[in-house]
Length: 112
Image (cartoon, rainbow, N blue to C red; front, side, top):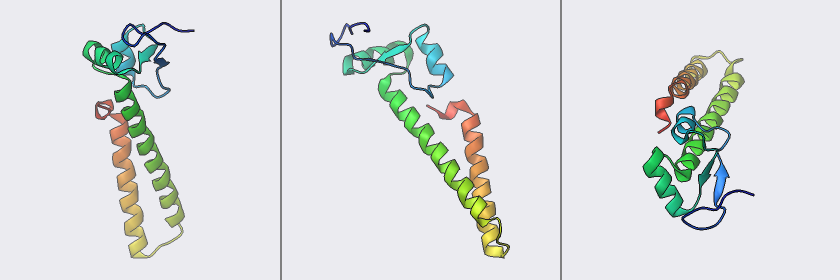
């Protein structure tokens, strides 16, 4: 079992999600769990700059970006056999969008 929260007096803590950015882990220091209750989140936000609600939003954002990349990869791949000008233009635009997303993913400052 885990510790009891000093705010809600329950075991409201959860472990950090799989895709937690390194800067969030560093902000929490040696902690491996975060509070899910409202007062616990407010306290953690004040102490670290992050809370469970933020992490949920960050992970959702990362998932949506990865899903978009997979969709673009599929769209680009499905267009590779076509050679007319319109399809080439669409394919190049999709590649450009994918490259921009890759740059955003590489620059961690875009994750809040």
